[in-house]
Image 1 (tube, rainbow, N blue to C red):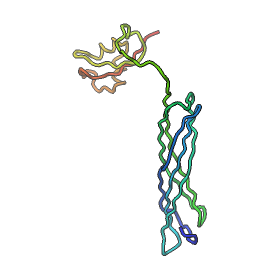
Image 2 (cartoon, helix red, strand yellow; image 1 turned 180 degrees about the vertical axis):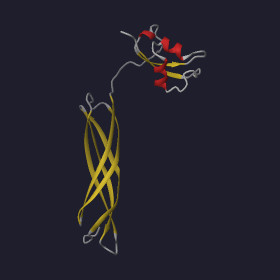
Image 3 (spheres, rainbow, N blue to C red; image 1 turned 90 degrees about the vertical axis):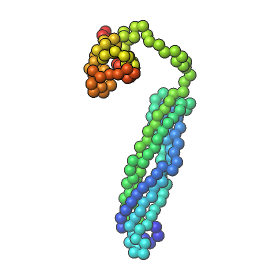
Image 4 (cartoon, helix red, strand yellow; image 1 turned 120 degrees about the vertical axis):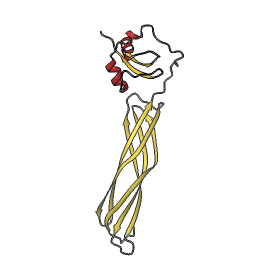
Length: 180
């Protein structure tokens, strides 16, 4: 905008994240970046009634994450939720950018890989979750009885519309429980 142009009102504001980084630190993740913003204004200048203003807004946010440290892996996503721009006076604009910052951390620890998976002999007596693959001739009542749960629980958990219609190969999530 020219120095002698007076701002009458704001017409449009838009922006994008031009740079962003995240770094794991002790018990937190530091997210830093730059939001680029473009604003179109209606000015008093009849020869050039619209004027554009662009700027870069740096941001920095600490996200608390207990038990994280600098050796852990970080996934993050920063999005602009909305931009608010206001005319302060005939030559100044105030711009506010609201960000959505999502951070996911993965603890990097050494451990043993699972090498063999098999069915436990007393699986029905162990509280946990299981994925059961329906076999030919299975009915929900028998499956529920085997895992000490109810047909209603299996139906609700798996969004089964018709409890009498299950088919071989279908995978069913079962939340097992035991009476104490």
